[in-house]
Amino acid sequence: MLSIIIPFVMKTDVIFYTILVIFNIIFLIKKDYFLGPKSQKDPNIPVEKMNILEHIGNIYDITQKHGIEESLSKGENHIEYVTSKLGISPAQAVIFSHFVEKSYDDNIYLSDIAGFIQCKNTKMIKYMHDVEELEKKKLIYCNRDSWSITYRMPSEVSVSLLKNDNFIPEKNIIVYDEIKPKKMYYNQRETGEVQKLISMLSEENYEKIMDRLSGKSMRKGFACLFSGTPGTGKTETAYQVARETKRDIMIVDISETKSKWYGESEKKIKEVFDTYRIAVKNSKIAPILLLNEADAVIGSRKDIGNTNPSLDETENRIQNIILQEMENLSGILIATTNLVQNMDKAFDRRFLYKIVFEKPTVQSRIGIWNSLLPGIAEEVAAELSNRFELSGGQIENIARKTEIDFIINGEGLCMDTLVEYCKAETANEPGGGKRIGFGSAD
Image (cartoon, rainbow, N blue to C red; front, side, top):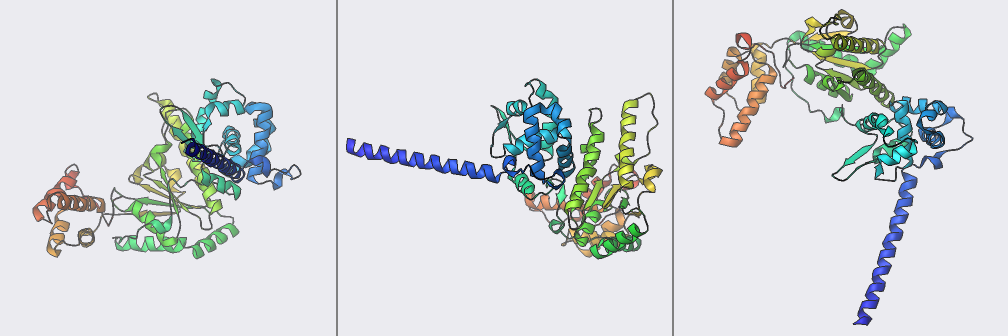
């Protein structure tokens, strides 16, 4: 029996130590691959010729010696490079250098960060916002479980830094070839204006336009405003313009830029344009910045009253930031709005092109019904189009309901049901709800 056990134990030990050696090799390889800025530095390289890893390595060393407060001034040249490259604040650049140095570690604790920047754990609270911002920008990843909170740096960030690229997170970026083509239903004027915009934004024409404007010392920013009632196709048109011109599209949810904390909303708006500038710089073809449902930020500026003066002041500051960014825009911006009549005049002059999306004709609505419900009889589509001036979004809602009915109840198209759905869509609108439409919700 013993003769069986001993070889088994020996074999087990060999396997254990073999695994241990393999893990150590992987650890060392991973540490070298996932950056380790110290190995990236050369003391003889002048600052202006350093890549991002060399700058980060210097920030790390300076912070280790002096802590975060002094490093913000002593490492100013290196920090300035990293902040401009990644669109982060100086404090965030210092903290990020620790994540880069420890990029081989999948479990970085807040206490580790506090030790690195030489502050007490309690004082670390001051910098928690910066850690959270790094997480939001997807430069670090947070693992929250019932026992602890740890951080790590995603491998795609490592790869980006190794290439000396600016890291642009995929969130809110739609690649143009992922946008599905849709049949659009416009009136004659809208068709002409949309086609003209697509032609201008084709890469060949766009470059010629930029060169000509630059040669005449004119602003090169290309800002467009799509206005019209909800469901008129503004957002989907922006998607289709992006697809047709082979431009990725960066979507901004205006509601996400609002914060209850003083000064935070302004920071978030600035970050939107900072991120877009980096995206333009890193792209062969300039992407489109889409400010969807921008009513909240391009409306008439507030008179500072007594009701809520701090809120009014914040909204006015946000508008001033956007106005300045549009003045200095280098790229393409499309804003959509339902309430063009409320737009501040200062914004009006900054939009180079404006397309108003109107209510559809009866013939357009027939086309929409046929497009979304291919099985619908021609006379039914005609009757519904004549009776209800629905938007494309409303017609799509009805089409979706009929699909659900088919799955749940096995019911096909029924005129009475369609009429009821049409009435339900317009129930809360004056005059039965008059809207435009095409093949998609706005």
